[in-house]
Every structure is written in structure tokens, then in C-alpha cells.
Length: 244
Image (cartoon, rainbow, N blue to C red; front, side, top):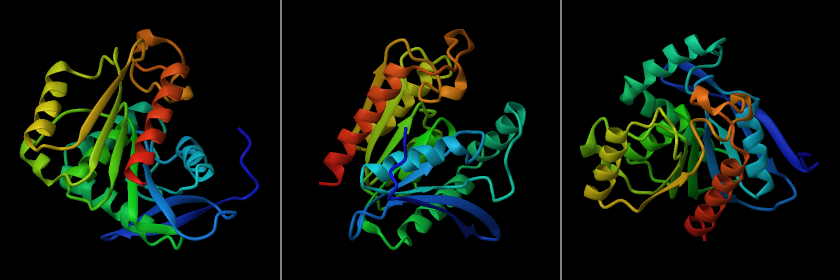
């Protein structure tokens, strides 16, 4: 995809407590005035060109997109083993995870062109889990979209803190999506009377939006072009609703 000449991008340094983080912002400078802002949260390998490309795609749709950095400015896993350890650290410390993602949200709010009253967050895999934690933290945003994120409910009572709408996009054949976790997530959403939706994509496994996952479904994580396009369209429809 050719990036429109008017799409501007830059890295942005910000902090959570004493930790320096390095995010990435993208916006279309041909659009005048404030516009909705979208926080983008990375998968387990940290902030990569993949998320930056998604931010540019969001900028082309007319949003200010800000890629959060959960791990830290110089922390970039070099292989799946390191990524698993890092992601596990934050999944096991949801308070820290929420602090990091809220720091990213604050950085998005501070972008001059972002309308602070029209904000949302999307995330991929680990990032999908993270944006659900952002919602559970009580963040004052319009909605979150989880792309093949972990759907579980580590503390079901936290559902009552969710103020925004929730859209979960999942692979119907994702082997990492345990039925008991999915049931717990659905119960959490129902009990808290959250405005929530789940869409499943047949034939799709984990990481279905990520070309770098390859195309071998037997590995449990693989790219699925159809599910990738359908989930992006679902996100666009969701945004049209929450930002109107």
C-alpha cells in the first residue's frame, strides 16, 4: 500500500513513572482540525513496523493514531522466547499493564490534533488483551477493539469499571482461545451490562491479521487474508458508530 504524501509520522518519547517509552504517531496533515484518536497496542514482539503500518492505515481513514510502547524504549524482544517472557510479565501484573497502556492513552490525548472526547484503542494479540485491560481500568474512551487478543476474565468484578463499548474479533479455530476463558469473558461482559460484541472468523487461527505469522494453520498462528480484511471492516463500522 502506498502511503499518501500527506501522512505525517514521528516517534514520540513519553514516560510511565520512571520508565521511558517510545511511541509512534501518524496523522494526515491534509485534514484540518481535531479528529478522533486511536491508540494502537502492539503484539508480543513489541512495537514494530507492523503496528506503525496500521497507524498509517488509520491516519488514511482520518484518525490520529498513536502506537503505544508497553515494554520500554530499549526493550525489544529478539525471538519468541523473549517475547513470551515479556508478555507474561505484564499479563501476570495487570496493574502494571494498565498503568503502561494508560500512559499511552495520555500520550495520545496530548497530540494536538486528537479530539480528547473521541478516543478509542485497538490491539493485536498481546495488545488485544491489553486494550481490554484499558477498558477494565475505567478509561474514559469510546471503545476498544481486540484483534485475536486473549479473552479471559482474570478478575471478573473489574467488568463493572468498563465505560466504553467493546468489540472482540477472534479466530474461530484459535487453539489458544480456551473455551473456559471465553465463557468467563462473556459472563463478565453480561454481568457488568457492557455494550459488547464478538465476531468469529471461520478457518482463522491466532494472529490472523499478521502476515509475519505465515500461512500454516497447523502452527496455531497464521495469516488469513479474508479474516484480516473482514476484521478491519468490522473495526471501521464500529468506529463509525462510536465516533458519530
